Image (cartoon, rainbow, N blue to C red; front, side):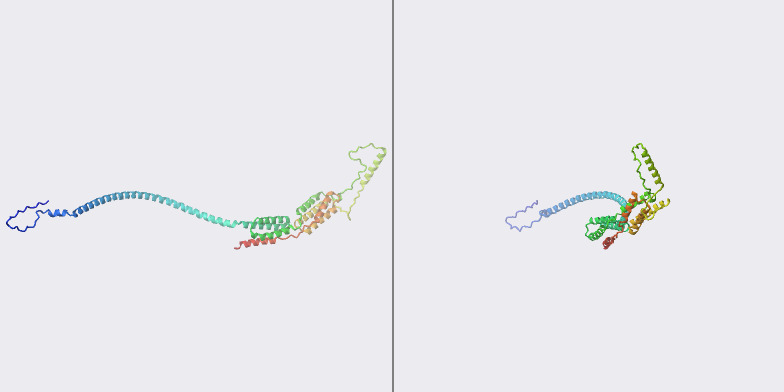
Length: 365
């Protein structure tokens, strides 16, 4: 606080002069008046705030440095681990690349093998329709061969029936026309007269086998009269005088008859053979029948009838017709010579052409 200097009181009789202006008695007056405003306090507060901000910034900076150092340390450790893992990955990658190269080599080999197998499969494999057409064509070809080579109508019918059954199992509409042609040829074969070639061949075989046992006509003997001879097992009664002379005369007559042989041949001329010619007769007769057998298999009607006719004539001329075996052989040859073996067989060209045209049309794009 400032102290004011006392002023002397003027005299009462003397007029007092004007009062002099007050002069500051100390130099601290301006400072006191300066502290009385708000600005110093604001400045102090600003300085305090600035100091507090500076301290806080320093603390945060220190924390940030520590965090950065910690992060750098962690990053360095992670970098080491990453480099270690990168090395392992690089090693594994090299191994995988080697394995991949080996797999690529094997894949190329397998692809080449697969391509070869596909080509082979395309060459060998066929679709279901192709297999069906192939089987049908084989059946028709077999039927045609049976007709042309062996004249086997039954075998041809069976082959065509198999082909028709194969077509019946396929419901494709494009097979209907082919089946119609096949059924037409099948009906033509069924309408043919049946020729029992195996049975005729068997009868010829039986005659050929029996040739060696057939008796010749020159070897036949007249039957002796067994009258006057006691039957087997019949008791012989004691002969009287009359019976004795009667038996003696009968025996004398039998002896006389044995001296002369009378044989009758129902032919214009007797078929006499020398003892050595009977073998050649039988062998030539077998050859005739074998030729007839070959003609039968070849369906040669004229040759078959000619050979059978010659064999029949030889048997009638040179062999004993009274023997049962000779009669059986002549009956078999007579039936064979009357049989028809030459039948005009139809061809299966329509069926073969139909199946081949169908295959050609199917192969066209």
